Length: 111
Length: 113
Image 1 (cartoon, rainbow over the protein chains, first blue to last red):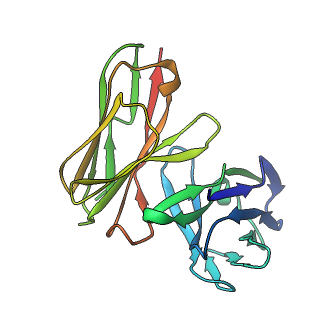
Image 2: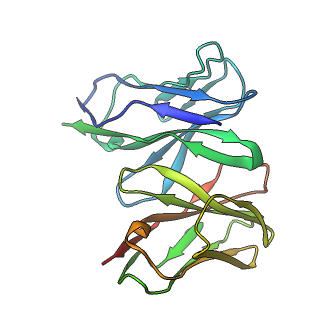
């Protein structure tokens, strides 16, 4: 079945460091891919998305490129801030408009 | 002006009890969802309703029963609560059954003593 694998956290880094969170997926066809972010005590918010191969989603300095050949959708940000501390979820849209999520990666940015 | 609101935010109860979680969305969306997030943050869909009709029913114990009185509301009733039901439950909605993104509520943390 469809599945999403993302790197386990926590990822701890300093302000202004470069962030990469790896995400790979298994799915039939060409699903839409998403990154959601969950700040402490809150629900998930859509961070960015890509609907087809080679699409690049971007928002708030974060980027991710839909790579069909490697079935990946890695999240990157060039210079993180303390306010980026959160749990990040990679997800794909499967049949029935269901979202299948990865296990989440906790990111902690220290000043 | 919360788009997707859930009540209560926290729920602490004993094993064997019956409890409900309510969800309301004011986005005018047709489709609503329930997700369960376990202690390791793993998030899994449980149910989805489209315009009051059940369209997704994952492998969930039948102690869990969703109810949608209208398309703006999707409540989750849980009978005979067990320790393993402890989790954060998230409600979400989308424009329709084919659309993304889904908009999430802030979650209900259920703790079973």
